[in-house]
Image 1 (cartoon, rainbow, N blue to C red):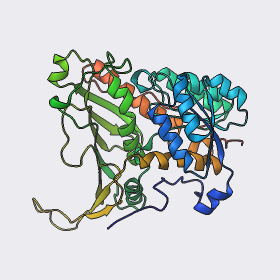
Image 2: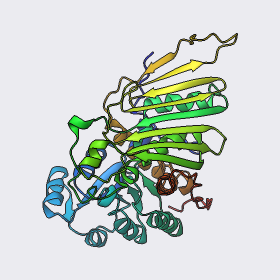
Image 3: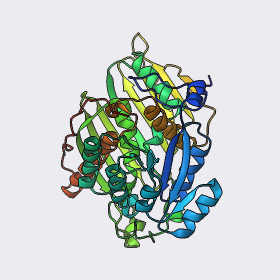
Image 4: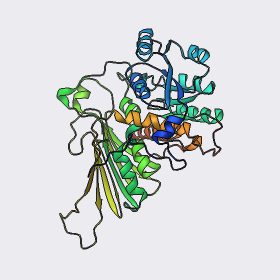
Length: 394
């Protein structure tokens, strides 16, 4: 069976009808400024260029050449400071933060806070921040200013994830029993290159802070909040020999609020993955089990069969292939969802891949760090802020 979503796979918001193609054309395109015009910023700009809900009117980078190059390509105005962009472009509605920094996140807080203070809606690349206190403050301040805050948690904006979600919502999984997730980078000793950039060189928790956002966000999307975390993390011998201090292999055991058990294995090129490729997720329940392979490619579903279990016997799976192999399509899907939620006036607390969602997985990441530093102790993540519940005033 092949499953291809028209217009890309965008998880549905349970509270508001999503826009169809005709609806989207009737909506006014949202005016966007992008901050940080390196690789990810240019990818976001490319996604927006083909989205009827997007109108990029400005780009910003402290490196003048980057801003100018992006401005020339997309026919917009270049700025070299966010303050100038905010002052000169009062009609901006969204500021998209694609800066990086240490752990790929230390340059998110300052521009995001500046944009929120100006009353702009903000989308932040992952991770939300590389400091947990900054992450909490971003979510608090966005709530205070009553603006939308989203994050690029793009790994579940896929056709296989939507199909898997349908299995859950229709009751075909039943009570969730376990979640197994494997996500990281293929590699091995022969392909190893020591870190050279300040963002990762000398940063022991670079992989945790820069990457665990993605697998944790997918686990939470399918299985709910995590209440307990325990990790046994390490690194391959070749990293130790190179005096590389990155804690690159993370073996993480979790308990979900539902009582289901979970396991996450994530590593940054210390080995080559086998079955399922670089990204696989299996969720098993009392009525059935699904497994997504290679994020965007396919999902298989096994329905629990009545009768006496036979060792070695296995029901035939229902396999749904997406017809997609290009991972970067997830960027288009996720960015469109943010624009769609704003256009639909979705209550701030209920947008997809919200800042609060990004804070949740950042809390899990810091619980992993705490567990590692305590030799594998069980840690309970810091509680999330309560929903405010009031609809956003446009």
